[in-house]
Length: 486
Image 1 (cartoon, rainbow, N blue to C red):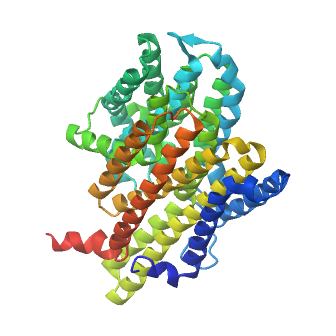
Image 2 (cartoon, rainbow, N blue to C red):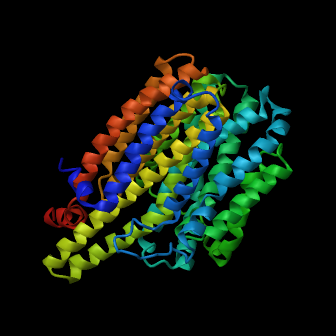
Image 3 (cartoon, one colour):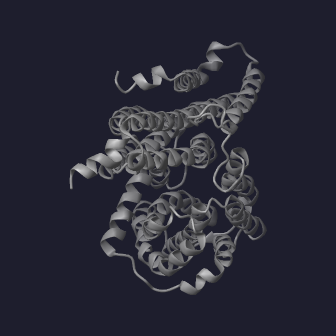
């Protein structure tokens, strides 16, 4: 009850919690629509889906997680929250438009006896997880400079460490390529193409770090626009999109490129960050990779990607619109600890706790409402696939919430707990897909994702309790615990 008390006392958090529960219950009933509703209700469900899209968009553009009433805070970089989010979602928007158009051309090309479409799909599933691990060391390298926000200095430091960081991260490609080869028995040519494609995307995603750190959403969108344009114009030149995308980021580095060197990051810290990134990233991305391995890529790709889209949108919504508010609240608390009396500290601490709670619950509400939207739209358009969409969608929502809670634990200094949660999730994920056979069929995939829903909702409860234990008194976790240990 202690973990729920702040929600019950905060009207904003309470409304978002009700929205999550209501959308979750309604989503669970969507596959039963054909049984419960009269024939011909498909159009009504489609209309309901469209209406809920409008509701979800309203949730996305409202900055209600702010702790101050009526404040319409712009995101970092000066862009309005809605525009910043739209730019940040450019890869989701552009790639979902382009891939269906170029898939036939890719399917006509074979690489080492494997369709190029399948090789690109394997890479697309691998890269988000790979990127989470490969980019984490960069933030350690520039971490002491980020508070000042001097992008010229940050760029020079990044350029000085990037070449060695890229080379040091390349073994990660082998970590993913070996299980892929064992599961699929692809030819050396196909596997080498996959590995090279992953390495090129590793270069690309690391080149985006500066745009992300500087909240340069326009530059971020330019990179993905160039990527999508190359993919659309030359779909069989698989190496071109990541290279062109990286070039759009390298050129603006300008004079910072003069600092390029082979300065190596500390091997121990680097390895620690890689493992940490792999375990944190496993929660949101491991299921797609494991699903590809157990099915040789023969699964309902479109349905799975559509169903996970709400979680991806909500996840990006958090980091674009809500995370900056959490950062500002943490900065205010640090300033209060050093400059204000204890009476002020208690109020600022409570405000920070409410801000973080609201951010997580707002993200959860957006993600669950969008999951309901996708489920309704598919029930109206393709009812045969709606059960799979619901199971994947709810599972992806649980993955996203668990990832955010793990992120907040990591943020406040609890580095081990999130990795333990990620490791448990990964074990559940592998077990679900290996123990439940025929996952390439709709029924098998539904059962596997259904098992993951149960397992990860339990993990979400555990993570929430741990999160509240540390964030209910953030001044202690952030400062006093360390001060008293000196």
